[in-house]
Length: 490
Image (cartoon, rainbow, N blue to C red; front, side, top):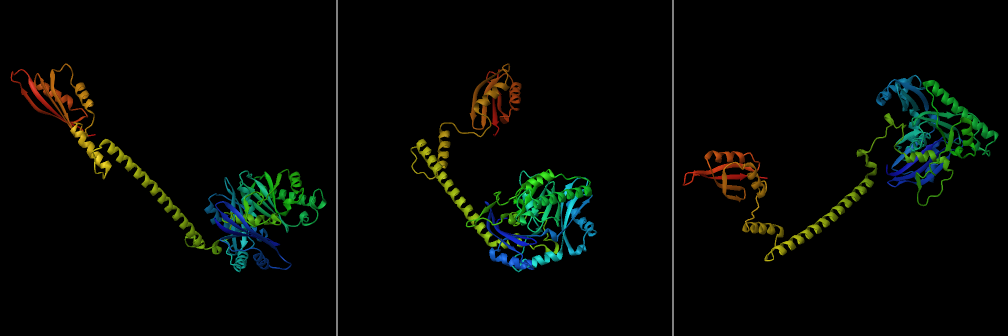
């Protein structure tokens, strides 16, 4: 959606925000800021400090909440129709939810459709989204999307042309790590990792081998193996990741990806949305400090309306502007004015071109008329006057144009073909005047005259064949006759 978009990633230890301008030529980073939570501080205070770093006014906003606020469930249903899934899923989740379903919001992903639908559902207490919307409302923000952690990073990743169908995204954050497992390019599982050794990038140990870093690699590899085993046991089918993608500050930890690849046997690579070229830097904007911390917020802004999970639902659904353009009325008016101006300019240019072409053709016709009829004095409508002059010249020369079907040569050939040589007949006169053909001649009997008439009548060149006269000659030995043929119209 063209316009200014704000993406806010509200994590457990900090809130990160970016302001992006999206248009026809791509997305442009306008500003980025981050505010870490102080001891005992509520997110509202950190968000207020972020608002002092970057301008949060926007056309569209999107917010991601920490995955630890959500509950995730994997289940299967015996049908694949999404409408039926949504209608039934609430009842299936009722026995799995820690709270009554009327206190929860849920959204889901169907990651496999075969004999049954395999589903990952995410549940969020309504009190959490109420608190989130109230907090953002104090800054005059009304987010279009409320989603889960770094799922937007996964969505961005899966849109890349060469992304595999099955794999893992590891969010290696400052506070904790999260596993996002995907299957058939759909999120299949989200697991927040707790406990385990301290993340090596949180201390001076930044290289492998090293006891602290090696322990962390073993912890991640073991958690991933347990997750895959549990999911395969739940659905009776194994998921075999083709690649591990690492994002966040831990992705830059030297040797971590190599250690994961060696430990799991799965190819591993780092994800960097900023350096991938999707996002352009706005004029006057420098390097983003600690760019790995902003990937969640950037992914939110790049796909402000395209996430699979959105908890602005039910009573929390955002009311749409009338006709969907109330928020951008001024921009829409300006764009409409530009389009109308371009349309009118195009019509004026085309009108001028056609006028010049018409004038040129008129001059050409005038020149031909004067060349053909040099005696012409007063010229008002050269084309019309030339038509009249040509018709008069044709009449004077005996070339009056007929609308009858066929040429004169066609009429002569037709008469010749239809009257056999064995028939005793002599034509003394043949006159073709416009649409009328008159044949005068002599033959041996009245029956022969009728025979000639009958042979000419089937022709498509004539509408009618009439015997105008048929009489004995003065000697009483031959029949003098006249036939009149009316030629058919084209």
